Length: 304
Image (cartoon, rainbow, N blue to C red):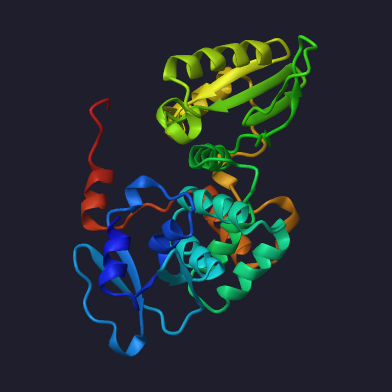
């Protein structure tokens, strides 16, 4: 509503970043919506205010969506991903890939080209390389991002599961892990599925919840069902939940490389930096030689 109001007052203003993402219909974390972001020429960028943030990014490709002038979808994705964290960026990357209706690699190449030479483009490309159009909500994307950051095995997305009753029903859980100990199905529960008319399709919340319970019982006939909510996305809590369901770790959290194995280049500067950082961390720390530290080192401990 705020973006539409500003666009009505200033029809030639170009919305960028997360504001453009909203106009393009992408999923954006709620806490990023407190300000409106505008792209302005480098020569006259003006002052930002508490509500309107101006970005001097020069001439960029633009399109008009629902009467509002915004940066193109690839440039919007680049501007978001190079400034946001991996988790916040993956929410936008997943929904952008889904909105583009393109296969993954051609769209990633568009993003790569749109951001060539920009600061933070390596981080943007790294995040984009994890994008998956099968992720159907921002909550699912956030959950997957935290799993990746914690080093847990990532699930298959939207796998078709035939009802164990043989009645022809097909279910598509959000996440599926096929483990030696059995299959685990993961479901992410946002509140909108029980209250948003666009998702309830005219049914009351009680009917939606009842159908969800039946669906869960059918899935449970062929595997365990793990339900997640936004409250479970704190790293410490999600780790406990995944451990409780025996979801394995594919790598230690401290050696996280946010790119899939197919896109890793062990000669790249980022990987060298990661290896150097790990090597430095493994070396014993040198004692501080400051006067205060020396005084502490010479002071006998109470146990002596």
